[in-house]
Amino acid sequence: MAIEFIRAISEGKRIYGILHLPRDLAPPCVIASHGLFSSKDSDKFVEIGEFFSARGIALIRYDHQGCGESEGDISETTTSSRIKDLEAMFELAINHPLLSDSIGLLGSSMGGFISVFKGAADPRVKALALWATPSYLGGKRGVIDEETPPLREAFYQDSKQYDTRQAIKGLGNCLILHGEADELVPLSQAEELYKSARSPKHLEVFKGGDHRFIDPHHRQRAIEMSLEWFQRYL
Image (cartoon, rainbow, N blue to C red; front, side, top):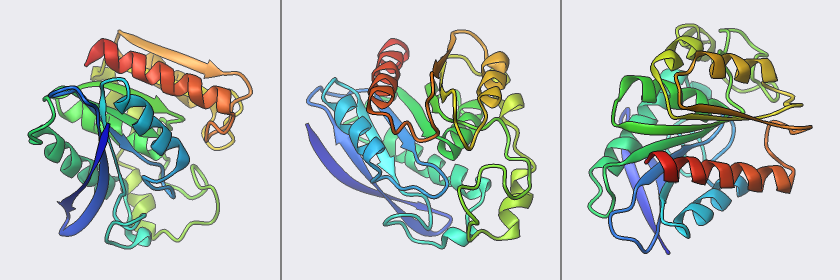
């Protein structure tokens, strides 16, 4: 396996990522989008990249504007800007000479949230794995915040136009993974997404699981299930 350092332009800012490449020629690719205050270099995303690429699926993990290595200010982030970041990475992947055009999306928390909208808008997205993903943000503080965030009011106003319960109605091939005891996004939101999605779909509830999949057994099972899902549908 090899890695390639990549970058794209989103809203005039450079966003950076890492492409995990398997040995296979022209492999399918999964684009992994991190949560609100996370980055591409979280232990979870590094593990996913290494696990997938060792088994024949390329993976891109990247930093949104204002996160990790990417340019921008986290206080200016919105759902709309994050969707544009994902779109920029998607276009990089679809045009990459070493990748096939079979692309899936994996997202954690808000990363899953934006992945639903990209999938709903773009038929080139073949499958999704949604980890701890909210069904809506609600347009008000406190819905998904881990702490008092340095976000401007534009984030909360922008979020009002996005409802994954509606967007996911046109989507199949959705794997939904959620901790039973998720402290940030209630399990009921995952159940709403599952109910709204088209078949094939699957909801896996991790007994006692938290928002970040900290339990190593839960995390490993979630990674394995995600890989199996993409092997089936990409």
